[in-house]
Image (cartoon, rainbow, N blue to C red; front, side, top):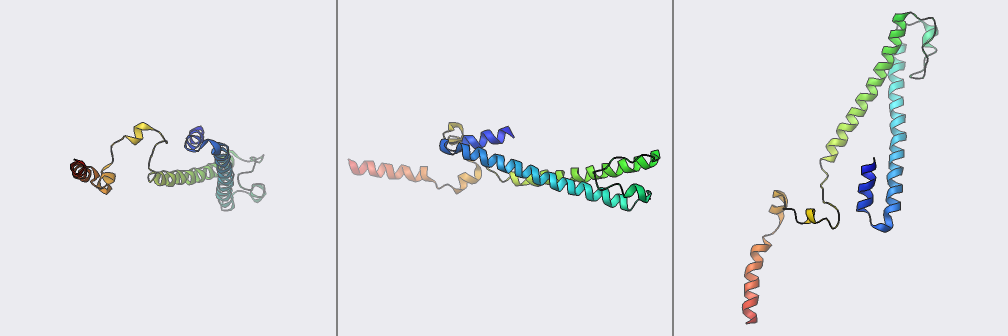
Length: 155
């Protein structure tokens, strides 16, 4: 996350750097809060649905409310393993959600064009891409005859 902060500060004017830092932190903390809430909901729902459809004793299932549980005492090893499998299924559900989120984020980032920093000579003198070159008018070719005409008129 430090890279995003440095990039945001580098692109912002000096007078706005504090605002950029604050907004970046706001987005970071808001995203963390939503991510935690969504991940907890996914995990709790998967565990609750697995427990309700299992053949575990009712007194055991009544103690389990999603991911927030301790393995009750007096269970057989098979029942303990079943509960741990349910928790692992919940973690897999969160993992798949985050994997999908990362994939969508990656796909959206493909549309971002690197324009460089203001005053970065390497980006300003970099050759144009084929698309940019096709969109650019042939100003170099058009400028040469005009320059010669204007120089001839001055003589």
